[in-house]
Image (cartoon, rainbow, N blue to C red; front, side, top):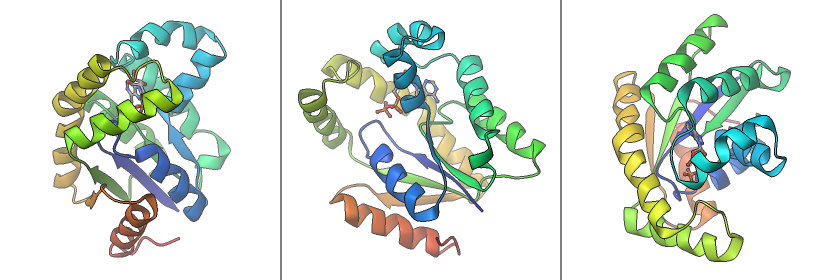
Length: 193
Ligand code: ADP
């Protein structure tokens, strides 16, 4: 049973690594960004609510985000562990995640921090924008997402550091190299697939 969380700035490669690690560990990757984007694409009630927020690079309100994750974590496939990507992003979300896990008498096993330089991630995101056309990948919106990350999400690393859960991994380099770094640092904590 492995309960992991990936944290790092937009463009650090969390989504890519989350998919690979989830496969390796046989646990679901739960990405709030993916959940929201799927709802926007399908024009669900939730999607209609969050589209403008996402396009502006703002955070979806905590109550909405928390409810979605709590529901997702109650699905059967998450009972054997999970890997969260893009959640929690605020202190309120940390508290809510703690509460939901405590209900089951569980807690996180590790928080993997993917470290990447701001200019490097901005240029990666601009490249992704040209290739995939994500609507929140314009330069202004990217800068705003980076700002919100630094202001609201980076402080969560201290919170998890106090619990001795953080493993910092250099996010620069090839995908497979970064995956190997993550696997090694998890293994150093006795967390293996
Ligand atoms: P990135 O990490 O590249 O910014 P994500 O796919 O994780 O992208 O998120 C895309 C957007 O979805 C965010 O800019 C935000 O609007 C919304 N979002 C995702 N996760 C959360 C969250 N935990 N809290 C609030 N909003 C979120």
